[in-house]
Image (tube, rainbow, N blue to C red):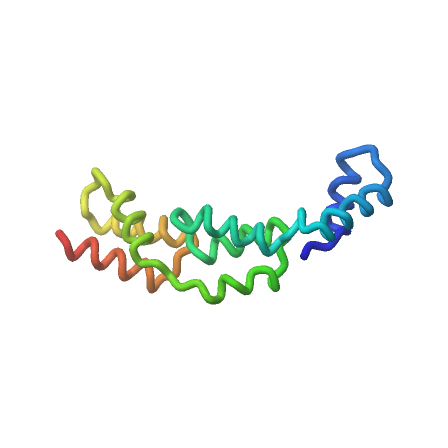
Length: 130
């Protein structure tokens, strides 16, 4: 679960409301389950898993303030080679199969947070097709 202090500080700067009123509201929302970082992280992953790799998703969630304990479910997630392969094919659509484009593809997939093992399997499969 999130710490109320994080929300209190950001809300206090944005709104002319007392810190105690903000804390009370946040505590209520946490107790009722309206604020749930674990559920947020799971939904975020489900939304972006076809566009981003696990590493990038974890990094983005940490930047959003989700604690490492709320990201433990991602340790069980295995890479889906089909996703990487589809993104690679989409990247190379209407492009020449050259060494330069191969290197650009590798950089593009790495920047999306995919592991190098996943990337090289996809790239080798695509370039062996031609």
